[in-house]
Length: 284
Image 1 (cartoon, rainbow, N blue to C red):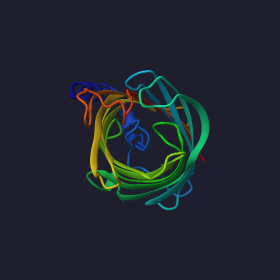
Image 2: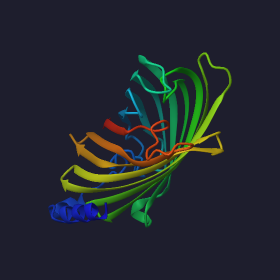
Image 3: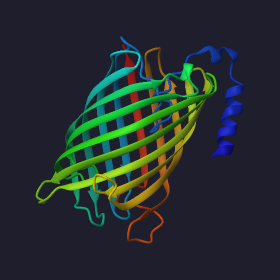
């Protein structure tokens, strides 16, 4: 990973000198990892985000979660973003899962971001991200549910080579509870995730990078019992299509992990073998 980062720095350094003067909006550069930028008043943004999750320990497992979100900066330091989410599942022959093929409205959410440190005036950028959600579909099994969730994250970034090479770091804590249709009792879970990424400018408006993520799953909403963990590694792509429209793509493969009570070298119950994320956005 370090050697790849070095190659990106060399490639970016060979870009035209005028690139350094081009401002960098870091929010979407890294894939699953997000930058600290939030825009300013009047920079309303409409964004579509689709996450594909592929592969369990056996059988056929294909899931896609899509969200449509409207981002509304209220000041240079604070932004809200309401959104709705959709889900699609194609599951067959997976141990412990019922077979199902569904497409459904999955829920709604509200995100709020507070910018604590501005990258240009501090050693790094820092933003506090909070999300509350109401869910109608269980994210893992695709079963109907009535659930509530919350997420708190710190989004950190720094320009290693101004305007050319940017690094991002995210620290996230998530929790939720749900009642699955036809099953008595509440299910409670929580998780931690640390992710880091480096992206370099290879051409005006084009950033390529690498990303690593480490996630842990727990039973209970206060990290009560360890359920499993996973390490993902993969490439990232970001391209400005026009002055107001952009696209980003990231792919992560589970390269290591463990599941509580099993001796396997991957956790394919709480996590997926592959994850991909596509974002398309426009501001106006």
